[in-house]
Image 1 (cartoon, one colour):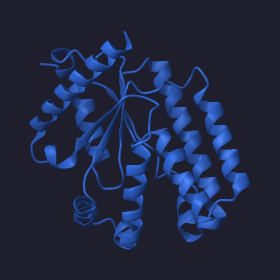
Image 2: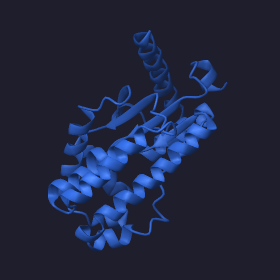
Image 3: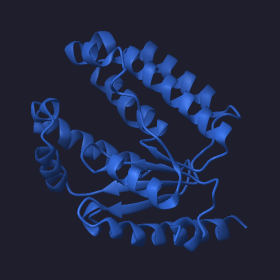
Length: 222
């Protein structure tokens, strides 16, 4: 049975998966898209012309990197709009501005002028008709110990070489961000409450929670 029909998830829904590195956003995106027969939207990393330069020189390339991500995400938002929804989105455009660009500005690796230019561009983008706000943002959360364990398990060289203090700061920034986020309804899922990799059927209780949550938020709007 199609789980989207079983749990009455609207076919034009846009659901965004958010959370810090290591929480399993891509895994959740693929699992939900498969179960609900939705399209996926992933950030483009492999074709990013600034990523390697950025890691070599934060001060020089942070603004360029964030502008590139912003442009790519806006193109994805336009694609979602043109299809009329039915998407699971890996990471939100809100994380770029609320966490990463803000972090570079606060750490001094992005100038005040560049940061103001970036935020002005973001504000202009979200006011266009091509910018469908998500019906739901699913925030994957877990303790810093669990997240560090997952980062260690997947063994990506760049992540292994990154100081633990960076992941601790990123974890805290995500927690601060989500506690004040209000652009759309938020459903929090603890990463210890399911195991999609080893138990594919564990995605169904997640979809049931999504269905209940969407129903409640729609009732509140009436």
